[in-house]
Length: 378
Image (tube, rainbow, N blue to C red):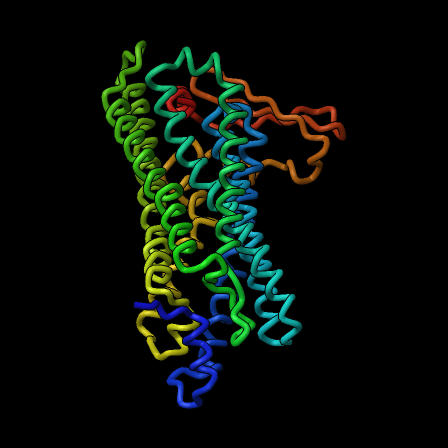
């Protein structure tokens, strides 16, 4: 029994004028995805830049968990930029029809960057979950090896991200019959493509999700039973409990959103490669429902370009204060001259901003509970 490969169905489609789906329909579908990628990319650039600046300028965030959060923002920023330029170049190709090599280069580079940044993001999320749990169960050992551990996390996440990008680019190509497309390719054969996608799904989705769920379930259990010595009044107890609940809500929200927006892509991708089809071959052969499912399954995963910063703002009061303080701070007027120091006093963080252009000291008070800060650093 032989498997019908996508290029075989495309040749049949090009020979029959009675195909149920016209070239215009496929052009409209790819134009829609290109426009969506541009919009998502722009939003992602704004949000992730905001997070990166917040982590960079806030001294209390210069610890492993928050540095990893900044690394996640860098990966998502590059992912957003990749989506933006891929959408722009694809729209240009649809409207102007340059030589085929332009789209081929765009396809390989874009999917390499998209795969690299996705791989870096998922590995970083896994390291964040492990690091936070590790700090709870062994705080002293964690502090002693903090710098070495951060370097290990960063290097490993980007090396594995590059591996994902290379494998994804290897199984992606442009169909000569539809040169404006960038779709699943069987350059390494059907069995090779199936093996690659199975490996990517297991190593960069299933296993990380299992690790994240285990670490965060144990972390939430610890946080619920966490008591802080020295709390002797109702106000301090209320603030302490609020900070615990805030951290738990953020953990649950980030984990749940990640699982929700990523599983459709991997399920649909496995479905395509194990049937020997592509998105274009499904559309062109009249399988509208299957093609729509395969096409729109890639939309939720695009949301990872900007979804995490809004979650920080919604579910965590301390992070929300830090991020909003960055917007109110006049750092953008003289960024190269900016020096930022953070001091703690009782239940407040005093943020002192000095610039070379003035001899005055501007002091901004941002209310934070110390329990919230220590808990988030954990």
